[in-house]
Image (cartoon, rainbow, N blue to C red):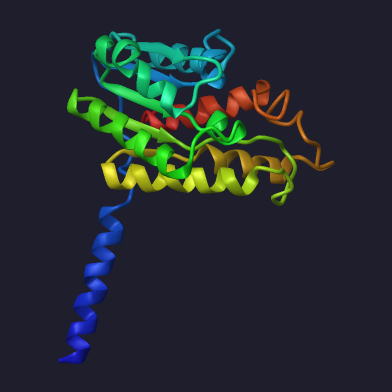
Length: 225
């Protein structure tokens, strides 16, 4: 009897864990309207050589008959609270089918947003986007400094906010794009001199050409491409 109870509890726990996992990427379809919502890392990325522009070009070329639209809704300096304030005008009013939320650097960097407020803000936005019929991709914040092995002042805080993104994605049935892990792994492998910047960023935050390339690859994968 005890053994059976233990087994049932284990199965229940396993189900709870799997139920909280973020959903898998789905392929783009005809008529999709993708909006990238974020801060300056998104706002500055609309040119063809930058990551949002490159994503737009690649999906449009790959699906010429789909009528795809890719909109950049990044604003420099934004935190999650700013995204909440402009969600209706800059996202919902444009009737997206996919929304890629990439926010958190300013929340951490400026110490502007508590963990609780960050999580609540993401959940509120996701709820509204999903209620409008769009799917959501939640991306973790990348880096503030490129030193290896936790050598940047805000690494621990960024890790906490990235974990919140994963948790929220799982709890809301959204996708999760782990930009932070991809950046940290790349820097670990390629920053031989343990520099503060110059690997994936130009200034510890905003992306270099290599950073644009990596973000393009991550966004395309998240979009099922």
